Length: 125
Image (tube, rainbow, N blue to C red):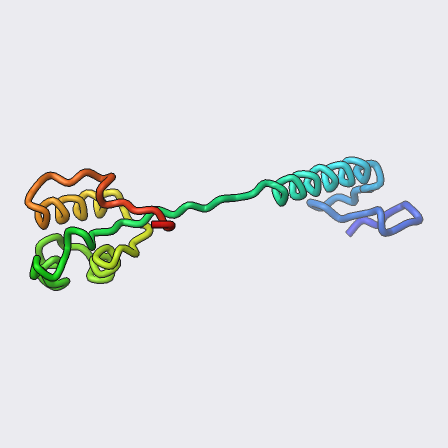
């Protein structure tokens, strides 16, 4: 391993088989650190509103519909946990094809074509 010729060993780094004097890079590193720090401070000041949408089939999947989770699973091929969450109005993410299957299930339960807007609810609702 090569030896650093500088008196201050703290400014020498062994990078990719070479000894590099980082003294000349220190201003650039300090500037980058300050820029990163500035961006972090700016992002902390921006209020972030997280509005979650849920898939809610509860208004279609009522006790009167007499459809069990098991029957819905056999009919749609969807996971029982996914179906249970959608029935309770707590499903917050899923695959696109699952979304279409849930919309079709809601349409079957309602006896009419249901739109995507009808199966979504906001977290404030």
